[in-house]
Image 1: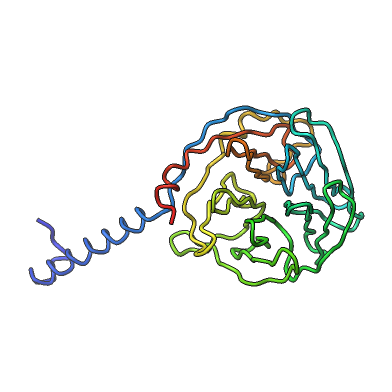
Image 2: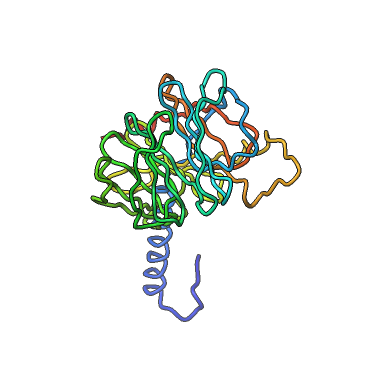
Amino acid sequence: MLRIMGVCSSREASVRIVLVLLWCMGLAGQTALAAPTLNYRVVRTEAHDATAFTQGLAIADDQLIEGTGLYGQSHLTVRDRASGKLLYSTSLTTGEFGEGVTVVGDRIIQLTWMNAVAYVYDRSLKPIGSFPLSTEGWGLAYDGRRLILSDGSSRLHFLDPLTYTENSHVDVTDQGRPIDQLNELEFVDGLIYANVWQSDRIAIIDPESGVIRAWLDLTALKSKLSHGSGWSEQDFVLNGIAVIPKTGHLLVTGKCWPLMFELAVDSRSLRRHKR
């Protein structure tokens, strides 16, 4: 029989017990509402340029488009997916830090971090324009209607793909808690996949509500990497998500990782709850 400090009446003790039980049930309910972690399997691995400080990754028409960062080392490349052959390449100025990339039809768009500008290229990386950014540039994706931009906060911005003006935004949460450090983005089957900077996790986000529907924990991938001289655990983090159109698999990598991983994600639970 439970005694509470020996000073309460039996009625008071009963009320306190009920309140404690209700509080515990509330906590259990919150835990049950946490976004689940999805299972995945590694289908295959591919070589990746270990000097590439990956900031953006995309696949279009059997070509791999990759944007890299660091001042004086920021590049944008297009490679043949099958052979890995470099097809096109361009560089930013030494004072610009490259960030996320995406493909919109016959255009490739690349963000810069703190330079307040994004660059637009044709598919052979010939410059065709630019537009200003009102936030820092981190990740970029395209959902077929809107550009989706992350700025390192918990907010995602939606831009018109022709005028590049912001039309709306959404704040990303898990159990009501804001999740910030949102970085490289990809749009997959109606949902936004976002690297969370300096973590081994990818958030899978409902674009309308901002609620995280699930997580991918890719910690295990790091054990498959060989670390050369100069390896930095702090800087060489998971970053880079591209969907492979023919299979729906994900291609993921990290900053200066020597490998890319093709992943088959068990997303059946997401499909069951799709609106």
